[in-house]
Length: 440
Image (cartoon, rainbow, N blue to C red; front, side, top):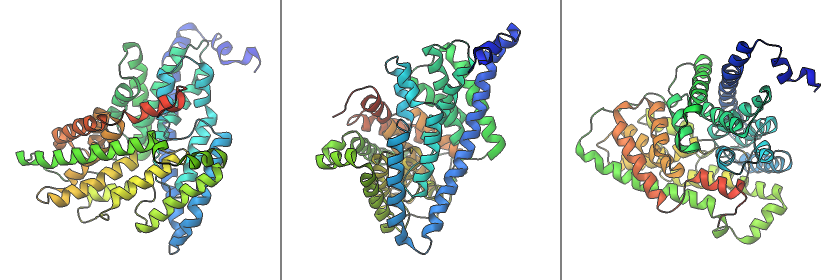
């Protein structure tokens, strides 16, 4: 681009006070609006992708044994060939950029237009194959990439400014994905930064607000899972199912983290070499296993699991099969280790909902919706080890003000239990894959 037409050169022609306002407010607000638009449309496209898969196999469930491996193989190959850095949920990439070595070229490989197209396009391909993938984590990565691209509009860009934009875009992405603005703020503090800087909070909060407003305008003022029916006061005996739920979810979440972080302990070394040498075959094998699990469960494990979790929460008569959370857990592990873009939030909530059905059967005197919500919080908190974010996300998604204490207690206990066996998943993945180190 010719020097006289660069954004920085154009800015010099604008009066100083307008220029300062545009740099301080206009660019972040514009980015937040774009992130909100991306979140809303990505959500709609994700629903369409799964619906397309279900139409393909309607009445011909055996077709999943062809469609899922084929799409998984192609998506894995494209991810490695053209869109390296877009794999997984995207949150580890954000953490690596915020806390890793100050390497501008490395950050550039993990964010930008290439990542936006790869994250959305390849993620939708995986969802069209019925894989157990969520779109909320990828929305965080897309939001960070959108804000990262807007750095080009500043006359001078420092590493600190880049990280500020990445943080704001990530939080705005989560807020837009779940329609939970408070959770977006806590996510940025607890999961991404572990602190709250005064000079950053203005950009962060306004980005979340504008992203939320776009989501509200286009998708309406909705609760992600709908309003649950649960009493506001529980007897002291309710502490027993809460404790049991926290223990089950804490152990299950720790097992999931260990399965992802220590693959070399349960996957034969020959298969690891096979994965690096033949990504098409590796992807097809993972897709075939996911398809087989889906057929074995009557199609319950395909997709993010949103519908199953919503039915368990809102429709008391709707049930899933007894082994659902275990089978969903296995499908989620296989989908994630395939190496294509996809997130963990929705599948984790769905697995937790399945465990909530177990606890609801054991303690039938209490509302199932309350126990399902508690296990959703517990499992997510165990995987992420971010109990406040997990608690607020679920509370905002179900308007569960009456469950504040049980939800918070479950999140704290399950997170602590998981922490006895494994580090926080996103931080560990960031260190293993993007800090230049290798895990065990």
